Length: 173
Image (tube, rainbow, N blue to C red; front, top):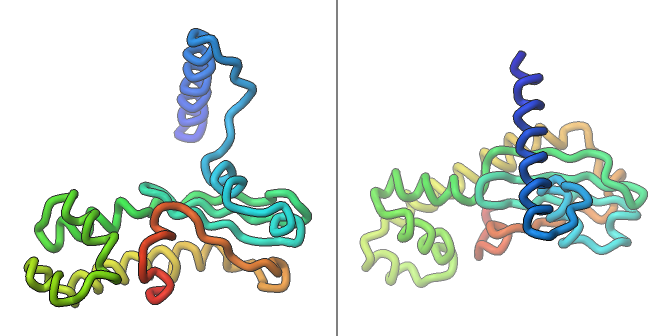
């Protein structure tokens, strides 16, 4: 079946990682899910203890980890990240991926006249970014956290990852 095949492929990949690590003289004690690793680097112990939600917006995925009592009790991965925003900008504005990445990082901070001089249709670019952020937070994250209540997570939501540093993200959210 599909799940069994995916599990076998995952075990083979993990075995290969362990083998290559040992061949390089490394002692690998285990593997950790990327969203969990990212949350451990972004959160304080007190936040995890009293309850919080870590959302790490990476390039290809967004990882969500729910904490209560100092322990992660749910890990979610959503297949939408910053690369999707970049790809949307490149495709719809018909610019290179490098230019799209540059635009993504400065669209909310660069003076409008500078971007307009570069031939950027700002309204369209804003709409592209907002549409993807709304899909991520308004649909995917919302659905993933539908059963959560603010009382269960007194330290709220902590954002991390490359997209969380995107100037102007707070205005979009």
